[in-house]
Length: 403
Image 1 (cartoon, rainbow, N blue to C red):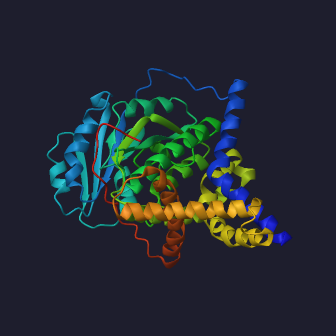
Image 2: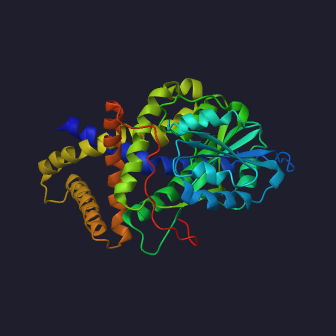
Image 3: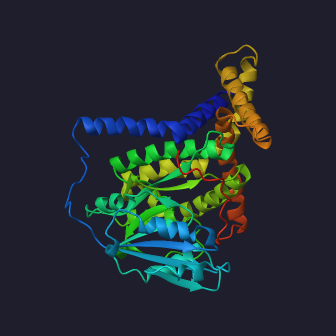
């Protein structure tokens, strides 16, 4: 029983640390650094305004082409300093032909569908600017996004800049919309603090940029291209900075089924990334970056979901030993877990009946996130997760609000 008690408290601490404790610790460190005048923003040359390339990979995106091209041309940055490159991979819906109708847009099409990262490897060789900005076809960029990204590259130590992913919100969001919006708000805050401490841990594929000279061809079976590309830049001694004023906005997944599909792919890619970035686990070599990487990513993709499963029977045994209905410490924690998962079940019930109640969608989304880790791990082990586009269906867009 003593061993179970030790295991329970260690597991509970790691779960808390993974989701909330690391954020609290980061907040405390940042406050202390500010108090002592450390980590002041780099100013540099305010006239820095290099040529940039907006780089979009696309598979059957004809419904988004016009909107994306117009949005890209409307961004606040000298038009003669912006090159648009689209790399289409196996598109058979007329996407390449539609793109060729827009003056100034470079289109590199391949009939064979090989996956996003292969398209990126193929297309980056055509980039002739010092900064390349990657973005998805189905996202709208904030008007000042290029300026906000570029200004962080004034600092020669910055090798990658991540924009913020935002979610169009509605008054009556689905479980996917409510959960995803809240998740990205929290993630955005963690990224701000990570970047202020030293470096963000990865970039959002919807909008991120690197110094073109730092590009290195990525393995063609890579599932999380944005994560691998940005972390490998950081491993070269550069930092990943984060600017929420540069943002890409899209609608949430149409429903939880679609969101689960997306999360499973991310989870499978997370396991793959951890294995390929093994040197980054070395605190002695990478110091602060390793600490951030393990705290923010590795635990969530590996140990924490397992502990969430194991802590339930452990807590039950400990609670039963003191009396399940005597409401001691262990029994209170056990019934707290039961209440949380019941709330997740009710969230699932309401979602299936299209009844919108955001408060219950949050535990449901949390459950789906951790379920996806198990399913993603299974897919990775079986080798059944395709590297090809499997974009989740998105809900209706409301252009007025973003979460």
